[in-house]
Length: 137
View 1 (cartoon, helix red, strand yellow):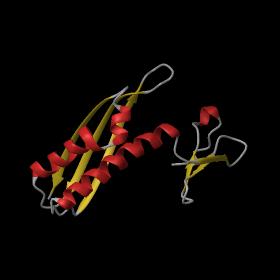
View 2 (cartoon, one colour):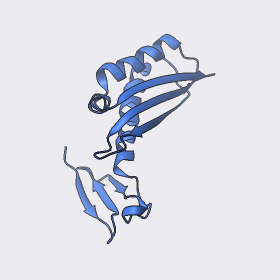
View 3 (spheres, rainbow, N blue to C red):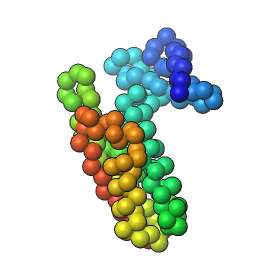
View 4 (cartoon, rainbow, N blue to C red):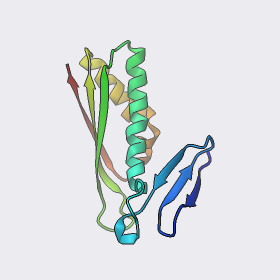
């Protein structure tokens, strides 16, 4: 993997680009000159966690022939008060809609969190990561 990052303006608005040309805007908080023109780097990490586990879970449920009509995940986090201000607590909440078997959903989430999601394994070095889910019919 290779990522390229360039400054867009004279403030702290940055654009990150991957090998295929996909661009993600990043910006800092207003107290360091940010202008709310992109996600903050720590927000991107939580987005990466949510995306990583979501891909695992949705893929596994598809293999289990479970019909997911709609899906959403929320990620809430707390950070250390002092620098390096790492994440200390993260909670991932999955929301499914469809005629799903609860046991299969639990199995997919557990496998993602305990085995497959690389982002989870990196973040759990500093944070306690918990999860929950609900099925809406």
